[in-house]
Length: 408
Image (cartoon, rainbow, N blue to C red):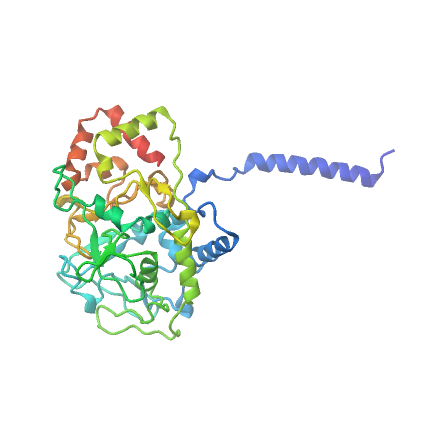
């Protein structure tokens, strides 16, 4: 005879098995690696992986409020709110820049430039763009693979640049020459008339990921750091906006962890790259000349992080400035870029953009393009010939090119 305890155990095993089977049918499995933008590069050491996790927490989980230093004027309350899942932002998180109409510099730094802080904590007024000032909208970019792009040698950028179009191909990419703040080390970097080569941001007006991160803390969230200990100047009053929280409002170690996190985020993994239609689309991409600016292959340079040092990557960018024509000229610029010049955005991860943008595309610098097709058709200037070549394709070829871009 089976004892009650034995019977109860057997029933428990059966119920448990049924529960496991039922749950596996009810809940989806973990997403594939190529369906996610976030995650570390392969090959980090245990200590580096720990630093990555600390940076991940500081980037995605640290939410600021008046009690820990938010503002007083700001745009967002956390890094992750502008880059959900380390992907692109959407109209709600789009930034507004103003105050510079030519390469001579921003003339509204005493009026709140270069960025509008359109939110404020209680008791403070938001900023407004000064009357008659040209402004532009900047949609937050995806964060993945940035460590590789940060180390692409400057010699490579200068070799790809052809500002005078000396080869006559209609493509005249130029490096962006920018002023660099004192907290950024520029040792062993090219210098021209006191300026250095920028590579991040819509206008390539940011030198490296430390520069980018410190700017985001202060300009986006109003958070002071060891690197930038002063609060923001309010555009309306011209007065520094002090708050009751002691400065700096975040530890240097937290900023450094975020920088490490950004440097060691993986590059997006392509999907369906062996598909016949995707391969056809890639060939069409090359034939119509898109690769002249969206370089499919770059080699990273030396990094103390071995996992990203001297690696071949496929970001589909040259990190250079290109004149995109009057249709994309907002009348605003940064650094040495003309108002119609924009840094070539990396295309890797493009097909996953909708996941962080609410299920739809918001492409180009300001999110105006609601599809890949629309983004292509808005290209002008140096990209006019490629756009014209795209327009001559039959519908099937156009769709295969778009299918390739969605696979990246």
